[in-house]
Length: 290
Ligand code: GLU
Image 1: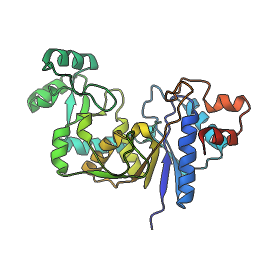
Image 2 (image 1 turned 180 degrees about the horizontal axis):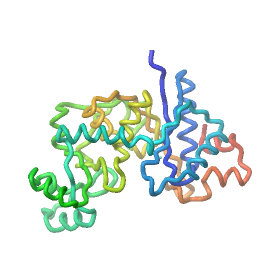
Image 3 (image 1 turned 180 degrees about the vertical axis):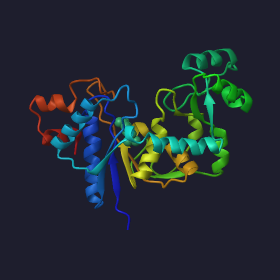
Image 4 (image 1 turned 120 degrees about the horizontal axis):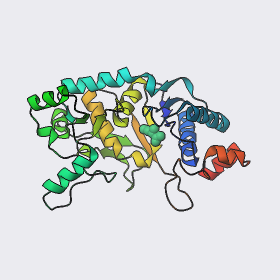
């Protein structure tokens, strides 16, 4: 029988705040109730912004909260080969293409070539990547890559949709922003041709998360509602790479007094500041309603 396996996957690019505490405590509770395990994953793929000090801070905060995770802890920066292997499969299947436009160039292209209609935006509000590079010939791509031009690998969403052919769903036991729950139909097209690898980061969050969840044998993904729509991309990648599909549970976000999502730059809700000010782990549980 598979042991229910949960994970908490923070990025060490800042201090944990009450929102992270809620997510970690909820994961620990759900793993306990399911008779399963909680694994820790350090999402430090962005080696520019992630630091060992922040990782140490995360470990201290979790230990203080009494959250125990099973060994080994997976640190993404130690597994670039796994992400590179997954990317190579998509390159071999011609499901990705080299995209040469910088953000500014894409904006200019859209301004010059738009139809006058508002240009489509993804669920996070960013404009979809223009179709220009997808339409380049193989010869042109090769020549520009050989000339050393910088590029990212982007998923060819139309090709990917054709490859999968058919509806993709996931089981949601939490809820999306509009209360979506139960069997959810994935809508990856809403994201356009997403980046899977950049020149400065060899793998994107979307690619790493599906590879890691599969390698760590994650059966239950419990995370913030802000990642609900990204799950559509994760489901598509799982289909393309033949990976197992966890159950998803997107939980409420902890909001600040100003009604906004907490951010790592805010000091007042950082666990370390609260601890230094005398809060106990029980106070934190109360503050996040657990
Ligand atoms: N590393 C992400 C974050 O800190 C979480 C990703 C996930 O749970 O899928 O927001």
